[in-house]
Amino acid sequence: MSKPDTSNMEYRYLGNTGMRVSVISFGNMNENANEGLIKDLVKRCLEKGINFFDTAEAYGFGKAEETLGKAFKELKVPREKIVVTTKIYASGADPNDMLCSRKHIIEGLRNSLKRLQLDYVDIVFSHKYDMNTPMEEVCRAFNWCIKNGLAFYWGTSDWTACQIEKAMKICEELKLVPPIIEQTQYNMLEREKVDSEYRDLFKDYHYGIMAYSPLKRGILTGAYINGIPPNSGLAKTKEFWPDLYYEYLEHEKEWTEKIKKLKDIAEKN
Image 1 (cartoon, rainbow, N blue to C red):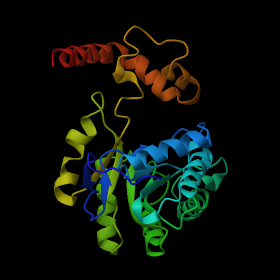
Image 2 (cartoon, one colour):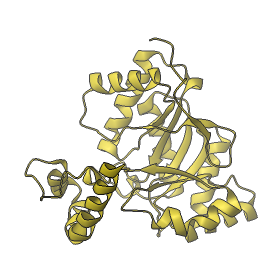
Image 3 (cartoon, rainbow, N blue to C red):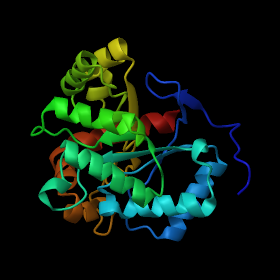
Image 4 (spheres, rainbow, N blue to C red):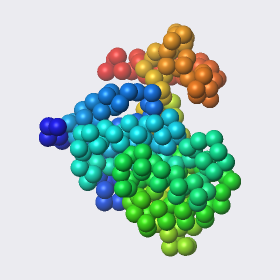
């Protein structure tokens, strides 16, 4: 593999840490992509200076982690040259394959590492907030993972500011390693959380943000201004991600008007 060209890549500190990541990351959510394609995409990312790779146990129930790990292995990527994150919340249908109990966080991360063929991840996320597990148990479990070398840091994904702040306070009281970053949706149609709700988290804790869905699953490209084509990506989500499909139908008129305005602004500039 050729030497990475980092001349045009910007790197930023991740949250309140000394670790630097490329401003663009590779999100490995596509569990159906073939191994050759994932390997080629990882190779191209590395060549362009992208050092940040994200996946989750829920993506294909482990398949995405397997293909990403295999790509790293075959490309002989030095572990210290990349930042790898995964998310724990659901790995199967059995009772303890889901949510954020101490059992599932620790066992789930161990299984993720096997699939990734790595000794550790840089960040492990709580993929969703678990209202059924005591917050102290969640914090202690992620702290255990860090203390035992399975991860360097932990973070939250799609948590509210109040939930994050509660975790921060528990970690402070119990002298546990606190979460450092929130992975959340952020785009021109979804701004409220980042712009308003998380404001005090940034100010008080220097909490980090890792944004996903910058194009709102393709909606912001304008592909659906005239309706949803039968074989489009959004049409397919009706089967495997119905919440997004029906969310679009609910906001179709509002979002279409916003997208048209954005399109006009872009064309004028």
